[in-house]
Length: 243
Image (cartoon, rainbow, N blue to C red):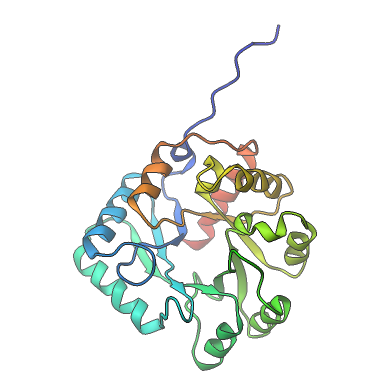
């Protein structure tokens, strides 16, 4: 006889293993849309420490005209955090670069800040894909960078053309899913495409994309809404590459 009761889904936090590496976070202060003060940064670090993380990679936005970060400004904010925080976790820094031609100019002048070796985290505008997207990606790859696209599930302009996701994967772009996308934090449309990407084995890694106290609270307390939980677990485990 089939049970009339459905098995309850776990909390998101229950899937985060001890020793997890977060490859996408906005915990550096006064540098983008993350925390405004170092004390706020320390709070977020301590909360993430309580989840059993092994390592956080800080990835503030580099978005000319909005967040005009450089390697130096990011390092300065990072040092302010390290001077004040006490944690057993490793904390490193990179950046989340906006995909436009400014990243090519930057790459030609200095080395991009990467997650590890030549793995670079990039993002798109939520309004539309960049002009000549594939030309930009090609230039990055020619220069030896391995591209990880942040939160592909949040680019609604691809929802009606899933083949664009397939095309990106075929040229070697890896996908990083936001953990909060699995709990309807950004809405059920984002959750649905997250499930589809997971089902099609297209998600390589995950990240918290944490900016605020609200984010950490949602990570700790929200119940999973996605169906592809086993595929999500596999992606979470893949983050161990960045230890």
